[in-house]
Length: 364
Ligand code: ATP
Ligand code: MG
Image 1 (cartoon, rainbow, N blue to C red):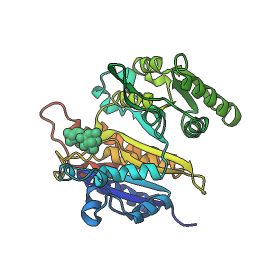
Image 2 (image 1 turned 45 degrees about the horizontal axis):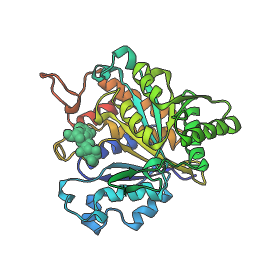
Image 3 (image 1 turned 30 degrees about the vertical axis):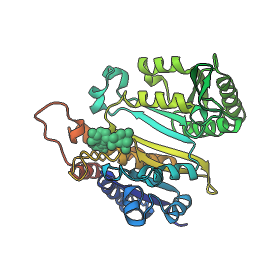
Image 4 (image 1 turned 60 degrees about the vertical axis):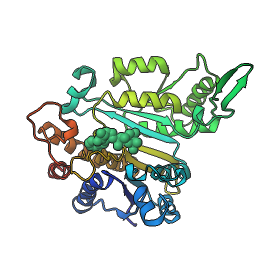
């Protein structure tokens, strides 16, 4: 059998810097854990525009459709701000998401013990927190028609339409149940069925998929406003939360900030299962290209490294190895190592991007 395939797209700004640390980790798994990947690397974003006049070539797009997983750094930067909209770096990323039809956006909120102090909540509320928000990413009020600003009499009216089809709800529900089975086997679905028809359908379809296909997973339903409250009151009651595009936008940002810095946050976007049963998948840190610190060795590589851990768990059935990597990150933080973004107080010397990567390798 051939090795699992991985397409690496470092992108712009700090993207290549943090990805260099991930490459060390990938090579370690190949050498030490008998978990070798067929890695290919390509351009996306501003660097692709510089080389080819487009932020994503057709060849790169085709490769992304073939591989088991794509790992992306970040795209964009001030150098490209004046470009025409059609060739902006971000368009490369949008094309990837759209053509791969990545409808389930996974944003974990995971709190490493050593960083519990960073949270606005009490350490006992967030310490050891490990939950996953799944946001439906390709439908809902951001895309529903009709939309627009129209005139009615002598005033303007802004219109958006929340619209979900049964199949759109069913497929993201399946993503949630599949994930739950690899975690604590618990899903909470959030909508506002008390005031929205799409919410009524959402609740019904999630329940139907559960009863027919995933009766072993524990399922609960919550109104999204109550969910926001519960997330800040006692987030550890949740495992997987599945919700629509708009509520997911809000709740995933809320949940992420329960746990600390942008430099720590990974994400995954998953699509339909491929022939081999694995979902189409794109993994990337939540942060952007951070032009203000690019090229200075200051970037925190952990968000990108944890994105690779998500790939291990969700694309490569290597949950134990993902855990191993996350434990190494935890251990390095517990030792007190901090990149500049993780430092509040004076007096502690920050480590560089490469020092952080090497320390994580040493722990592995
Ligand atoms: P985008 O529009 O691409 O999301 P942005 O301007 O919203 O970009 P980032 O590029 O993520 O956001 O940067 C926001 C701030 O966070 C910047 O000050 C940046 O230096 C900091 N930052 C982002 N990622 C990291 C990281 N990995 N390590 C350290 N600092 C980071
Ligand atoms: Mg941003």
